[in-house]
Length: 115
Image 1 (spheres, helix red, strand yellow):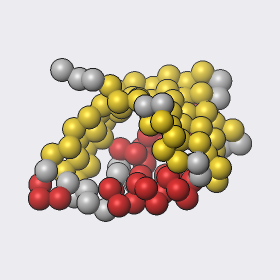
Image 2: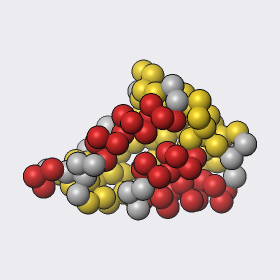
Image 3: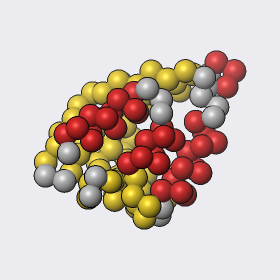
């Protein structure tokens, strides 16, 4: 699982969000954003993220922490992205992923308050 998570991290840091969605999310993934259902399938997650990703001109994504326990990966990233009209978008987020058969079957995302 370490190699899968490392590849996920590399793809995320490279801004390949839609590609990693297709590669690593199970077709029936459940995705939560701060406790609220964001998507109930890989296709729904892909479609919802596509509009946002297409507006991003530059990605600067840095891994803050990685903890893997069994089939659970807990990843925290600092995100700095340049969007339309050079608008800077900055946030830190934690992803808690449940992996099964080399796919993410559940992902919980939590925004982290920064100074």
